[in-house]
Image (cartoon, chains in turn purple, cyan):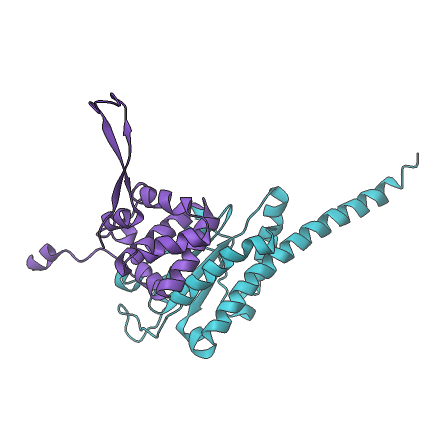
Length: 131
Length: 175
């Protein structure tokens, strides 16, 4: 799926001439999850998932959650499940994360959880060549 | 100690995770021949161990460690004060001394990443072969809820007993 990026606002500088401005860019949930695609679950850090969790915790109603989940691909759903479990470790915003967990499982089934539990870094090919 | 209704999303999340984690099968030890050990306990081969997950809600949390032939579930109960800590410790010791009656209870709770859990359950492929997986999960969930209820009842009874004892003692000192 395509990453959707929208310009949030112009910060600083001259409003008329738009000189010396920094663009604050709002990333969608899908694009945040795409950036975590190559990181296996054991290597995921709290800092890595902070961006995605920030968007997740803002959507606390059922309608918003379902709307966000509609736009996610299967791979993004798997990454989202990993992000949810990382977020659940801290115990913060747990009610929102439980709702996300429920609706994500409704969409993907228990296989998503199994893929999170079995996720690990791929074996390094260089080690095999040393033999 | 926590409201039952407020705990429901937490309980359901644990239930879904357990349902996924309890896909265990018989797997003899790869290290010692003719031995069959729960790999989550023996941890002899890293490739058969799955990623541990922690599901936390406020001060209570559950750790689910899975492997190819066994799953270990550790529970940390929410404790508000020193009295809760004492009651929980004594109640857990009481249960752990009778662990064989519960089949899946571990005699000592585990410690993971610096967190000491209050109670641990070890479910192996033998248990999932002889018992229905869905009912096993329902039992574990009901057990967690019953423990919370028991501990709050014990705390209330401690207060009631203390009041009665104090009332009786102060009868010796009439005004």
